[in-house]
Amino acid sequence: MTRRFIDTHCHFDFPPFTGDEASAIARAAEAGVDKLILPAIDETRFDTVLGLARQHPAIYAALGLHPIVIENHTEAALEALDRRLAQRPNKLVAVGEIGLDLYRDNPQFERQQWYLDQQLQLAKRHDLPVILHSRRTHDKLAMHLKRHNLPRTGVVHGFAGSLQQAERFIGLGYKIGVGGTITYPRASKTRDVMAQLPLDALLLETDAPDMPLNGWQGQPNRPERIALVFETLCELRREAPDDIAAAILANTHQVFDL
Image 1: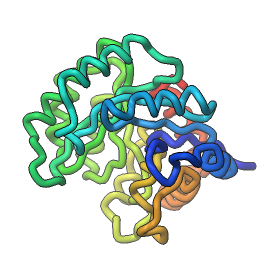
Image 2: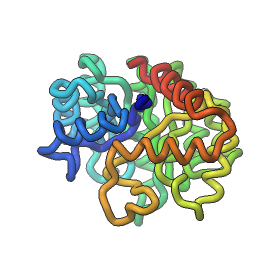
Image 3: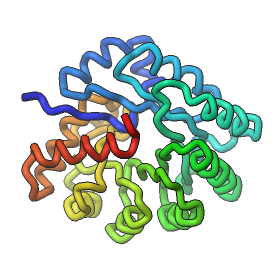
Image 4: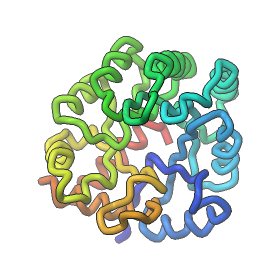
């Protein structure tokens, strides 16, 4: 039996998928990945992501302004996001990818926080969950989430923080995105965290073409490799693989109302 997976975070609007979407979706389906959620990173990607969702039954869209390209964002882009969310296009399932990032040079952190707050308000107004990016910013992000108190919450994607930080997000109602980091034996902290968190708090993701798995370094990541992330998660946890698969699928449907 092929297990069914949903890749809750895949940047399918970037190479190597651009122009090769149909065969990439077929490859993913062979591995049991029958749905993909595509988060936009800036306003120029909104039409592309929504177009892919219209064109392909497997694809769902999220729209947001990502902190890694903070210099691209404008108030006009926020207004465009608000208009799109108000239209509630078919298969739009979240606001994302949004969040905070202190990894890059000149992060413009005050500006990042302002755009995050604006987008959390939009998610609340339009009753959508959020897909959250956080690098070196978990405690600050948790403060923003607590303040906004979204009814629909969402997921902290690609999580690699501490158990205490994960538990704080879960306490606020958020899920934790499990990705390829756990396939690296040296990522012992993240592996320990994913082994200990409650099963009803976990979602699976690839972040393809980013976050390559162990053994695939230097190559673009792909959504079918979620099956390998799942296998690693099963090695780390006590529950039976069928129970893990069923729970994660249920968690995903709960968050994104697919």
